[in-house]
Image (tube, rainbow over all chains, first blue to last red; front, side, top):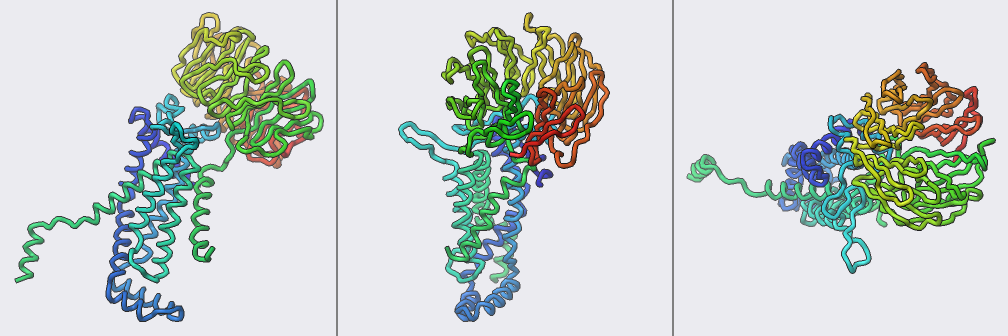
Amino acid sequence: MFDFIIIPFTNALVFIYSLLGENFGLAIIVFTILVRVVTYPFNAQQMKSARAMQELQTNPKYKAMQEKYKGKENREKLAQEQMKLYQEMGINPLAGCLPTIIQIPLLISMYWAITRALAATPLQLLDLAKGISLDNAANLVPLNSHFLWMDLGQPERLFIPGIPIGIPVLALLVMVTSYFQSKMMTPTTGSNDQAAGMGRMMSLYIPILMAYISYIYAAGLALYFVTSNILSIAQYYISKRPKPQTPAALGAKAQGAK
Amino acid sequence: MKKKHLFTLLPLLALSLFITACGSAVTAGSWPGISFDETRGLVYVANNQFVHAIQIENGLETWQFPAEPKGAFTTYAAPQLTEDGQLIIGGYDNTLYSVNPENGLQNWTFPGAGNRFIASPLPVADQIFAPNADHRMYILGPQGNLVKTFSTQDPQWGQPASDGSTVYLASMDHFLYAIDAQSGEETWSLDLDSTIVGSPALGADGRLYVGTLDHTLFAVDTQSHREAWRLPTQGWVWATPLVVDGQLFVGDLDGIFYGVDAASGDELWRVDTGGAITGTAALFNDSLYIGNEAGQLFSISLDGRSREVPLPEAYQGLYYATPVVAGDLLLLGLTNNESIVIALDNENAVVWNFVP
């Protein structure tokens, strides 16, 4: 279904793998960075929207509206007023959804690109053979799936002497980073806004779901999640920092004060 | 659970299922592995969660192993009979099983491997040579006791070949290994410069014939341990060649089927079948039968005249599996069809089909 994305992803992964000394873990990390660069405009839009929604929570007009239209009987009216306010402030409450929707085919394609590239079964190798267009692919197969303590084609567990069970380190990292990432995107102050409520629920469930996917599927996918989440968190904090004022801007400010 | 929580959770769960379902039309790990037991008149078909023992005369099932689905057990490699009457089955659950072919009951298991048994094991005298994707070939005694392991640098997906005294193993690490069947020690090896996925074929002329993913078919002399010739092919060669009367027949993943002179390595003819070939051709009714990924079955004469064998629509599928000759029937394994094996007679009519 997503072959038009999976095939280029697989080729890109294998190509990066060949450039990075046949290290598939590094290939996933570098590839994730490239994906984040390509999807930067969408992610920036999502963060902008999330920040606008957060700022809205402290807006006096918004608070007054919440107070005025309290109760179930006013829910419809409250929604109408909120929409008006969104329009006034130039906020699109659905703007944050588009990047999330774009992430879904990327996520699916990444899962299958990793699975195909590592080709642990005959049908996966056949899929790889059909999709790969690199000249030296025949000599790269089978790809080395080992990275640190992990086999990237298998669910990850760290076995420590003395502990009878394997610790799913990546799944835990995915949960923690997903939680921080979701929290960043969710309005912080209390609100009975339905969308905000849904957002709060998502920030609880998404980390659990991502951790579960990481727990049961190939470690390569979990590595993609962790890298992507860390990049997303970094992007959020970098973009949140106040921009240094240029001399021209400072001059304009001074003139305005006169 | 509150309704609103359910509305959030359900789409997320659906997404996780969606992730694993969208990438490939075929979700199985491999294709059916078929072997024929002439003594008992049984066909063994390894496919997904079971090995089915099917009566050759009517296609009815005698037993299945395991009787009920068993945890992570799946199997695709053609089961192999030992001289003392055990049926050896390699599992994707990293376990090798010995089963009684009369009733499908388990004799013993060898759970000591680190990865999948993708290739069929090879019984030689009273030992079992079982290559594994964990880069090791496990050499077992008749009761499943580990005698020795033979390690390579990469996974082993091809069944070894043997003349009784030497076992020839191809590995994805580019090497072809000759191993003494008694001691399990390497006697020689040869680097073929590319990944070898399939099994080598051992000709009566003492040569090994094997294809690589680097678009090459090799002949290796087992006496001199040197390459006798190499033939460039159009696609990756995964299939094991068939050797018949000094000729070699093999298909590649570009769908080209070749007739080659085994002595010189000269290409005699080629047929473009239009779909990837992963199986070994079967010689049936003086013709070569080979299927492809496009779901076409071809009958090709030894001098390269080909025709497509029409099959009823109900039996259309992907022909990845190696066809097997069983007496006067030809057995075809199917992928993406509810029947996993069909039996054709001399007229290419379907005599029976087996739906698990």
